[in-house]
Image 1 (cartoon, rainbow, N blue to C red):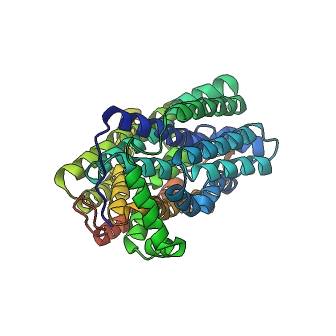
Image 2: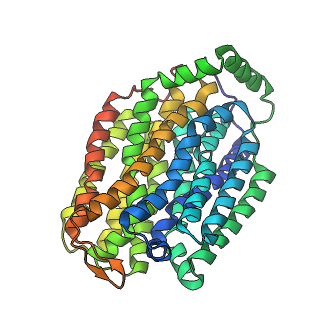
Image 3: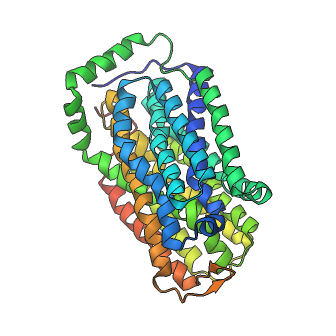
Length: 426
């Protein structure tokens, strides 16, 4: 069922979409924050590298469990009400994490945050698909991701400085307070649909009803492009989870001998790169009328940049900041899978279709964060200084080979995805 969306709601469309994207912004703070308080978490709960990886991965376990149901719910119920409910769960989980006296409660808090976070990106894409036409979706998606990366940026140097000033627990509780302010903003501004679109809303509901629940699921599950897009994005997104979310600061401190604050400057540049790269790739894709070619190009350059960082010795702080920026910029080609999936599925099933990709993306964090920690300690010589394990360049490079291998596979996957030419194919 092809659909022409009545678009030009101008300022209102952008206001609604970007305000909803504050949910994504907030969730990325929760996702990335452990990188800034890595040492504090290890000391507070007496964790080794795999243990820390498992603690952080609880976010992904909660996320993956609800992602597919989240897509179905967003296709059928009020997006605004779902955002407010899910964000409230995230705030409760953040408070539990900040107050946790034990590893079990901390893990439970992360799990609850992950449950709520299952709705953050899907809800933004669901709203954007109602407020913007298909030939604008790549650029709009890029800006939605930019909002998330601003959250990732806040979770780097600002979170390091805040946790140093007030302690990681108080910093986490202040973070929960920010979430309450965002709930108020979303309640006041977000609208489910553009004005005077009751007819299209009724058509969507009728289409969903005619398909039936199980046929909707089957339609999405059997579309191989949904799976290919999810795999591609999960592979290109690994630097966010591995370098930005947990291990990047330890790598920079122990291998390149930076201070914690200097390391946070470099990891922040990963998110600055994505902030610029996401809308740039979205604009480029919309401009040339192609999705797959920019995705292939992004994966090829990502491979080259990561290998350069891994094997060129004696990199300065400035060089590392540039490299982290480039990694963020070129891996931003991953944002193109979302408009591609939207264009390859019925408009009424946008949330469900994107949830398949999101489920694969978050599963990669659930798998690769602990795997990175296991690889890091596989040949570790057990050196400990001031109760902190010290890893060598060889230890880190052994674990970081996850990313070049992922990018190589990503190139192949992007070649297999059906080209949409920036138009709905359903």
